[in-house]
Image (tube, rainbow, N blue to C red):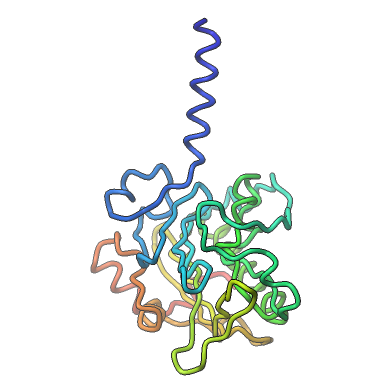
Length: 260
C-alpha cells in the first residue's frame, strides 16, 4: 500500500508544478512556483498568467498577449530537447484568445511573442509557445526577417550573459484606425518591443522598438532606452529591482556592452 501511494503523490506534485497560475496581486507573484515575474509585472492587463515557460499579460480587446516575460539562461538556449511542433491551439485558460483559423488568408503570419526557439529546452515549454495567446499578427517580411534576426540575437545575449530576462510586447497606434483579422477580430499591432535585462553582474538593460513591416536595417538601429518603451506603452518594467538601480539602467543605451 505504501509503495503504491508514494508514486501517486509524486505524480500529483508534477501535475501541480506545471499548472498555470493567475496573477492578480503581488502576493500571487510571491506564491507562484515560477520565476518569470520575480523581477516585476510589467502591466496588469485583463489576465496575467504565469506558466513554467513564460508569463503573459492578455488583452480581451486585442485577443492576444500585450506582453510576455520570461527568464532565459545559457543552459536553456543550448539544450535542444524539443522540436518545433507548429501545433497552434486556442488557449483553454483564456477563453477570449484567438483561434488558428483567424489567420487563414489574412496576409499575416502567426508570429510568436515568446519564440518557439527559446523554448526548445522542454516539450511543455515548446507546446506553451504555440498557444494562440502568445501569437500576434505579423507581416511575413517582418516575422521571417528582422524579427527573426532579433530573436536570434536575444538568444546570443543569453549565451553570452548566462542569464537574462526577456519582455516582448505589442504596440498599437493611437492615431490610425484599428485594424484586425479573423472572425474573432484579432488586433494587428503597429509595432513590437523587446526589453532585455542582463541579470549577471554587471547588470544592464537594452530595448528595441520595431515597426510591423519588412526592413533590412541593422538591429542596432532599433535600439532605444527602456524608459522610451515605458513612455510609449505605459508599462513599468523590472519594478522589483532597487529603484535607483532600475532608474539608472532604464535611462541608458549601452550598445558596446552587448555582443553583436
